[in-house]
Length: 382
Image 1 (tube, rainbow, N blue to C red):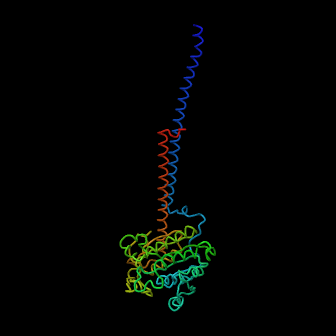
Image 2 (image 1 turned 180 degrees about the vertical axis):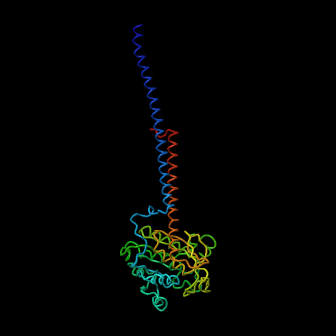
Image 3 (image 1 turned 90 degrees about the vertical axis):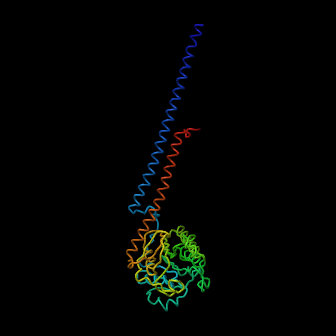
């Protein structure tokens, strides 16, 4: 019995050793888990802090005006260069002829006037537009447009129809859907679509579209009334076609939104402003630009023409703004350039805010997930 007892001693000692090892191992595992959880917390917190820091640094760059990181590094400059070609679609309209004349007066660019009736232009304003080439094309005629826009580096489109087709204003198929939607779409595609005659001939810099205020507000008063004939719906479709192609092909664009037009020339008396010659331009010549479709007011045609032209020289890839007039002297080209740069800064800042919000959301999600795993220990589940 004694020997048996002595024989059990080593066995009992081994059991104690196994128990001690198990306790130590459990303690080690617990410490290891605690350490891993702590490490995970540190990594999650560090990652979140890094994301937030980088987002804040980008926001500071935006405040200083550094927007280059939001443009593709290989993006072509949108600025029209001296000696290059610009086409004005709708050049026989009141605004179109002012745009064409302004470009010709500079003497720095090859100017093409794309219109349906060249003879009417030759007998009136075109004789004062030195060096201007006239191209006969209807925006509903894709083939004619493609030929007119061949080798054009930039395009300004000033076509449009009245809001209501009364007194024959939509005669000859000139209704909103055919002009403001498919006409604009044809012009964009004829100029820049893959496989188009002019698509790859020369660098494509910018397409400037004269649209209207109220397009994005067309379901609210008073624009819902103005949209009774579908003109704002058609303009919205035209804008969408432009932005889609610009994104696909990588060229710059500008959507310019004037209010009710007033002031000369008065060649087209189908608008109320020209029918009654609401001439307040003597005192109302200062132009105001507002990002997006938020402004309310009327717009002097000559001021609008100046803004459309200056869009060709802005560095921003994407512009969408309203242009209205207010009492005061005419705004200089230099001041318009400054306002366009400010708009570009606002666009970049909005992009930065969106990016910052996304990164902050990601950081919060990462930290929340890390904390949840730390508390629950789910990360160690097998």
